[in-house]
Image (cartoon, rainbow, N blue to C red):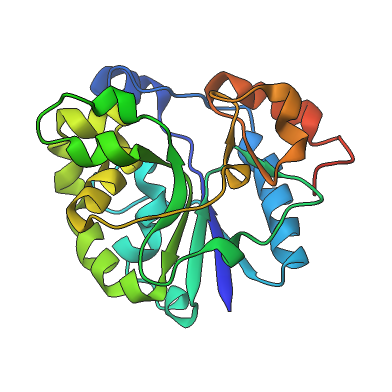
Length: 235
């Protein structure tokens, strides 16, 4: 059995502007509810479990690390699954979407790799990313074989957030930067097809319905309110 989970909790906008300059914060649009409706319907169509998490993260961990919540609190419920797949709360799923778990690797993190190789070429120490690019954390599949390692890694998130390095910040910071650091250390990865993370910040919006998962990145979130009404979107 496999699991899809999502996380969303409105950050305190003013607090984040003061303490985390440069963070893109958009609250009050309820886009996460649209995403929840679409992803929960998708989970039923492929016969997997679904969880939507919205509780505060422990300690002083900001809500941008919700992807790690199952491992931060070492929940028992995730241990019954072969894979658990995180999907960010700005995604919608098309009616013809394939089963994302068919593309998961049992031995490492599975995610879509952005073609950012040119950014790292000529930078000492970043040769690995110059060869491979780096992942987008909008859709990440964790295999059972990594669960124990992820519990240990998640126990360091609060400290890692305070000590984010320039590489992590340049990769989007927060969860995306830290996951890429983990992959950099492991030197192993698995790339899922781009159709499971069709990123509207990088790809033409007119082709979005041809894909499985549509990622309404940043300013594209406003499109979700119209797209959820489209017959090509699961809900």
